[in-house]
Length: 191
Image 1 (cartoon, rainbow, N blue to C red):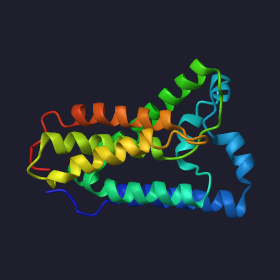
Image 2: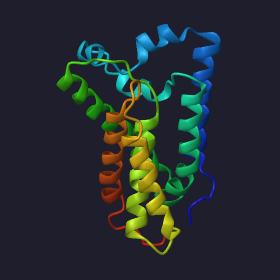
Image 3: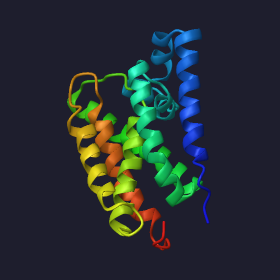
Image 4: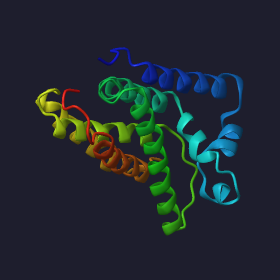
């Protein structure tokens, strides 16, 4: 039986909060974003670390709060179902998938912008939750899948305003759906 304590989720939330505090209370956010935000031309110049570091930076308190609230709310169920290793894989690979689609869109439109936030990785967790709900309707509340799909649609398509990297949200969601199917192959149906 898996642990009921969402250790990985708690650690991810804690790391994000600590980094936000350090960047905003001790450091200079503009300098940090310039060095660590996802920015396609910088990655093309060899700064590959940005595809990871951007996931731990947030633009402001509201951005951080919304992302960590969503992560805490959804992370518990998925971490319990997947276990810490598959959950961690989903989070980080989902974040990379989000980054990849966002970068492709930037290159396609020739509109290069700095991108920060954990929302792409969190959308992957939502995508995985939808898959788990579909595969095992008896273990999750029947409305969880519908609610997750609605929240996912709102997060991706309801946030198409300026300053929101909705392509990262879409990339994370697609990656989460794919990972959800791949990582549940052969899993016992009792999550």
